[in-house]
Image (cartoon, rainbow, N blue to C red):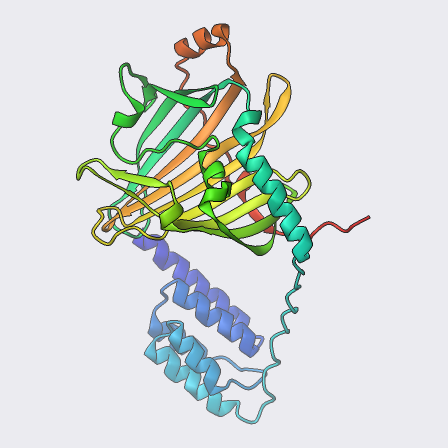
Length: 368
């Protein structure tokens, strides 16, 4: 590996030397110095090369200081100082092109925001009533990081059969690391686990008792669809979001805040991002955050908005955990499908592509 770096460095310097024979602008010099810093080129060789350059415009002290702060070595900086003296009588470098002014997209009117929040509330509190009885495969990829710097290592892959019947979720662990298991409870898997993704959080955020505070945040786009985005906050005194720590035997209820993404066309909630904000200082788990993503899913020929992916993160001291949960193979619940479901031990499918969940800026559609 070291030999490869030496070869690359020599090639880079030789190529730059050939280019320097045609003179350089300050912008080209800056690009070369930054590239040399990134490649960890020898400071003395870079300085020797800088002394051969003939600039076509003035190099000022501010640019040299910027390059020094970017990592240019002392010999290189000394050579650059020499260029500031020798180019003092030249014209200054052209200023960089001005960045286009950001486009400010106006929020909906207060009346439109109220209308949308009323519609969201109606959808949320009645959400579970609109769902069919179904079964699906829940795949959880669990990661841990002991450094505190998100150096994630995969801990395991858990595959469960999830039945949703008459508003009740039932989990059956069938595979761990693509190997069949029996008599393993969802609640006894150890590590971080979650439940209630099929409407519990929706209902709790929008129920009148929560007195959730909503404010306009922005427009956005998910999977090509324009979204209203509201920020929200649920106070701890009115929250039902519980966090349990099995080793200490403690359980707390935390307040939380986050963002709601709602489809502008259908009024359906397509993403919830939340973070707990009132965890007691002496509780072992200091941070918890979730991102729930929904999408239109076909169940027996009818489209329903259902969870497709959840990311759950938590931190205990420097130790972090992350669960990437996906819901796959939705189908209507029946006695026959349950028999197939119980005997299915297909290895976990590949993760869903990240671009399916990428947020893009958006302007509201123009009214006809």
